[in-house]
Length: 301
Image (cartoon, rainbow, N blue to C red):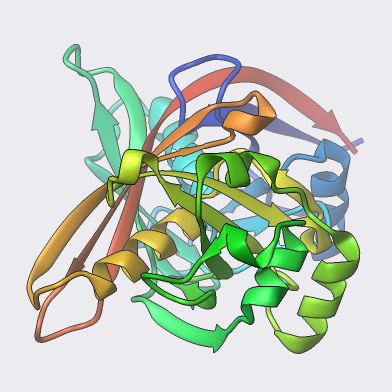
C-alpha cells in the first residue's frame, strides 16, 4: 500500500491555533490528478498542496494547489505554507525558493527572526494586477447578505481583480457590516452564472480600520469552490493591495497593507501585503506572513 508523508502548518499567524491551516504533501510523485483532488477533499481544508519535482531544474519545485473541489492556478497561503515547510526541512535553505505553478513562477522569500530561525515566507504574486469584470453593487451585497448601504463605492465599485487568481472585491462601510456578512449560496450561484471564473465567483470584503487606508480587515467567501469562508487568503489580499495601490495618487508609489482576516471565524490571521506601481510598468504585489508547524503524518493509500 503506497504512503505519502504530509505536514500541516498554520499560515499567517504566530499562534498554534490561529491562521489558515494547510496540508503539504512533500513528495507527491505517483499521484494522479483525481487522487490529488480526493486527498484534498479528505483533508477538507481551504487548500492542500502537492510538491513535485520542477520541470526546470533551476527552480525548486512544481507545486499544485487544490481546494476540496478544484485545482487553483495560484493561491497565497498555500505558497507561504509550502515555502515554510520545505525551507524548515532543509539543512541549509536558500534565501528564496521558486515554485512552478499554473499561473506562473512564484518566488518565496524566506523570513527569519532575530535568532535566524525561519519564521515565515513572503511570496511574490506570479502576475501583475489585472482588472476584469465590474460587479453590480446589488450582486456583492446579495452574496454577502448585506444591504446596498453596506457596500461602499467611494474608492471603487465592486469589481473582479487578479494577481494570479481572480476575486470579486468590494469595500464595506463599517466593521459592523463586515462582521454581519454571511454567504448566500443562491446569490453566489447567480453571480457565478454571470461572472466566469476558475473559482466560480469568490468574494473578498474589506473595511478600513479606523479609517486608515493601509490597515484593513477582510473576509473572503468562496462557497462554490468548497470554501464557505477562508481564515486567510493571500492571493485575494495581494490583489486587494495591488488594486488599492493602483488607485493611490501618484505614479511611483509603494504601499504596505496590514490586513486582518479570520477574526470572525476564531482563527485570527495577519497578512502583510505590499504593492508597487511605477509610471513605466504594471502593478505588482507581494504578501507575507508567519507560520507555525502543527503536525506531521503519513497518508495511507
